[in-house]
Length: 460
Image 1 (tube, rainbow, N blue to C red):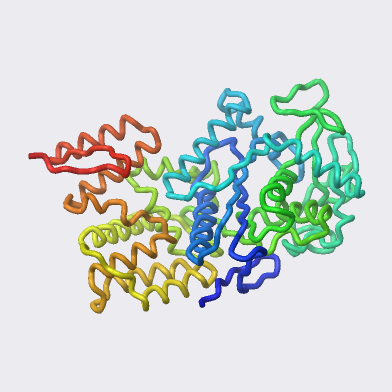
Image 2 (cartoon, one colour):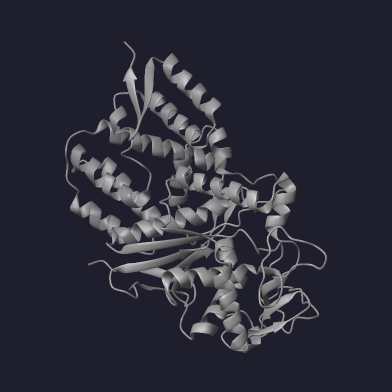
């Protein structure tokens, strides 16, 4: 038995994972604010949470994963100032906030599919759970954790002695060296909005009646309300990016534990940032890229997934086009080997044990990938056994290494074109998909779409 070791951000230690309920695991993954295109840095979080889920399932746990969609209440400033990002997004593209939310939710789901990220068991929207959020705020009010200002209902962080433990905030509730704007009406710098009032004389696109007046929920309350609704008062695992630690997740803990008097999360797990060419992503630098941008450069999105597997999820990672190209070459080489190998094999026990030890060491995907290449280059394992072993590993990697088995007679150039066409089809880039088909046909092959994937036949 190999223990599954996971790093918990709250305790700052790696320890053996044991679920609250034997054999069952609940995972809550902080989802996107659907006001713009998710970039590749955003998508690193979901590849990480997908690997986590796959590792849990590899360890025979029955997993329930919940991902939220933030479609209201996320202001442009974490200090509860500025506009709702949904209103900003609506004005930017000339659609209603509801249309913007639907459009970018569909984009997000498409990117998940392109990266072969397993669909969450529950995808919940903040706007579908206003009732639960109001009820939670009302309970906090009854318990004495709230106060009213001219623009909303706020959580009084001084009432929660453990506030800031997750982020290791100092005694004043401020990050060391950070400058935090303080509203004149706030009792403490770290107090945060639970409910915001609609501005006087202005009708927002998204607003609701509440015991405190017409308005909308703050960003943080949605995750507490929805996580506890679907996974109970204490969660096994909660994931997100490291940027969520000092504010969003810290506030989730405060409002949830104030109500339940129980530990909110057993394991907090956070992935580190993704840099681009050594720089933080920003519009001014023009280095914000989406999954569609990768496809436009003839990159298989699963090459990006392979690239991410080459770094520990808690390590800051630098994206370069050169590194992505190298990842694609490695992925295509691995696919080529898989297609060359034939026969019914069995999983190599020694390799599986090495692999299992790697992934159970806090999702050590670089070490697990190294085991794959050891198997590829081994002279002591038959080709059939190599194929069976790596296909088992791919249950965790999610690289679809067995997908092209029916095309094993086609040259690699043709197979790559078929993969590219598939990505264009997923992205609904029909013209580009047709162009890829034409290239395939010019090279002497026909491609037909079947329920289990595209099939290639050589022209006679």
